Image (tube, rainbow, N blue to C red; front, top):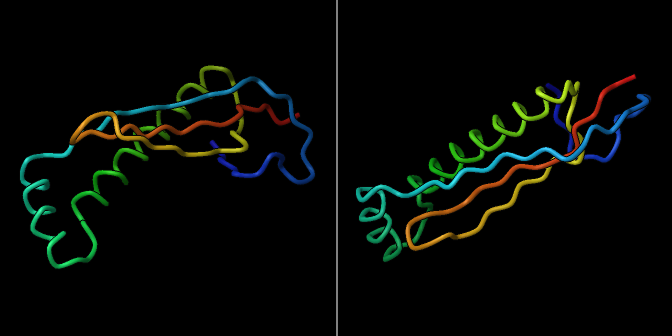
Length: 103
């Protein structure tokens, strides 16, 4: 499945099949949370959180692609990501875009 963050595919005629999305709510583990608390005292990247969000984006993207494949799509255009805090220690990551068939 090809993913594009533009609203068209240059040189291709497209049939829009509809919006597709994938979402996941990921929580921190206690070890990462404790280490992150210490890291905030000295500054720097919170690698545990970075890894958590990378994994969450991968899961959300896979779910979006699965939904597009179920529609018979060849590609997803205008792909976007969003995230929000759901509760203390948990974040939602959403991937969404428009599933298209290339004519």
